[in-house]
Image (cartoon, rainbow, N blue to C red; front, top):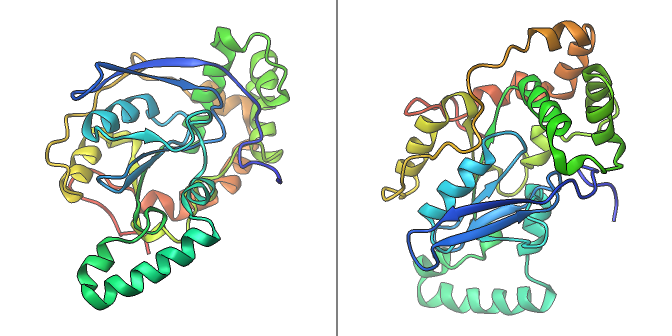
Length: 276
């Protein structure tokens, strides 16, 4: 099947209790593979949340489920998957596509406007995700993997580099060895749903979520809850000093983010240039 964007095996089992305003009081999400990132989707609102690691995903998951009561994990046994692979899961098989084409032609003759609204989910879904400074993301991931008790017996070399080696070794594996996906690959930049993709700025996430809600008919959305939030600011200068020239490799690996992505993120009510 080829190499995954995030070629890491099962990392941990983390259970989140997420309150839902309607129906069941709690929903337990079991995150089994952190790096094969899947989507949380709402068929009613036609929105999919693609969670890149260490970008406030736990908080966004809770917000999404409270905002969209019909929210479901696209792949329950593997709730973390990249956008392109997630869309493949939504794409109908050959027989379904033929039947859908026939039905669509009939609907177009009867009501073109209704036919346009009845497009399959893999064509109509609006994607939302979060990006943060790649180096800060790597620091956060390194510290998480180093401290997470459930990873004590994990044998994956990438995780092992974080738990038993230096930050420099970890960064080398991540960006020189290609063990971590770039933002553009994960969010499928230039893919079929790229024009409908909104990337939120991690540094102004609360305002960005409010803006996204207003722009996408989610006026009922609650404020973003902050879960698993680190206290105080992290001093990353020692990590910068440790990797030295490897910072150039980080910038090369995440070149799209630094040259283009940083200008596309939604920041409150003042988004920069829209994705083309």
